[in-house]
Length: 154
Image 1 (tube, rainbow, N blue to C red):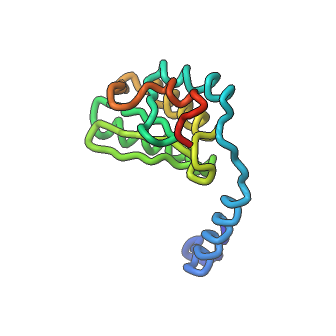
Image 2: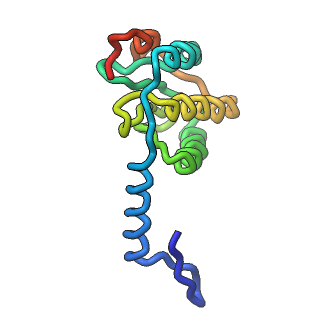
Image 3: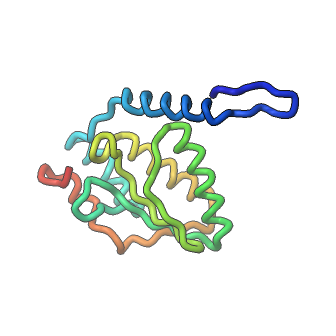
């Protein structure tokens, strides 16, 4: 991070932010990720299906809807997940309405599911498991096993 020292506080200037954004774009393009192989799909996706993840229709993506006891629990979980997303530079498609968080994972750079999605899904489940109030809704997606077939959307 580009930081200018001042007497009052550390300040990141507009020009510094532009440089930081440019560096992030370059690093993001350098990151080479491949979509999951058929063997990796069978190994990783089927257990995620047992944990409530489903396939997104017409996409190489997975989805899970988490339900928390209240908005504060949902928002707190999203904040904890966001820290890992920033650390791994991998971000979900998600939305929050009151106590419900709808998550879709796919790697846009690879145009499909990668090990980053598996890693993030497992981390999300672990963080939700730490909250005794978290449940999930499993009837909104296709069975995840359909993403293990050779003709699955890519």
